[in-house]
Amino acid sequence: MDNLAKNSDDFTRLEMINGKIIMMSPRPAPFHTLVSGKIYSRFENFLKGKSCIAFPDGVAVYFDDKNYFVPDCMIVCDKKKIQNDGIHGAPDLVVEVLSQGTARFDRGHKKDVYEASGVKEYWIVDINSKSIEVYLNREGRFFLDYVYEYHTDDEIAYNKSLPDNDPRKIETIDTEIKVSIFDNYRFQLKEIFETGI
Image (cartoon, rainbow, N blue to C red; front, top):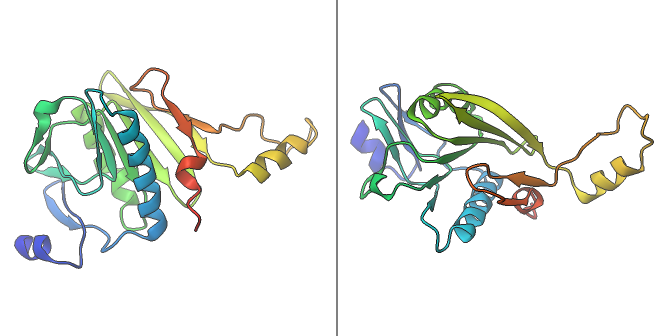
């Protein structure tokens, strides 16, 4: 079963979660792929000439004999962890883009493993709500640092036009997302969520 799944064109990712082989979604939806690709592209461009390396979807991360995952995107700063078959040990930052088949793992067991293994920053990207939850690791525990929500230029302009006492008015709309593992690195949320679809 294991070899069959690895050689099958029907599945793009095979992961081991708590000792069980899990075949992930056969093929990511176009919007899922575009969003994860845009995040990777921003990281890859920023990290040119720096010591950390960004990896796109498709690279396995090995944590122990019961858990190896294939994140949608990650950043690794310790190059000793990079081996021919994947990353061995915790990346510095991991991004998981939710899909119907993976959300319970991304928010559950995988999040717990990322936390315990020392991943410094974990992003959960929800393409339906166009939001990004950013978790930071403090003393071996994740805490929710912030939830970034994307709003179009028209939505921002409409919100600005509402009177201050209107209950629909959003007090603060973030247009940038901060990457906490790097000082002063931010990029626009529209660069992630505006895909032309």
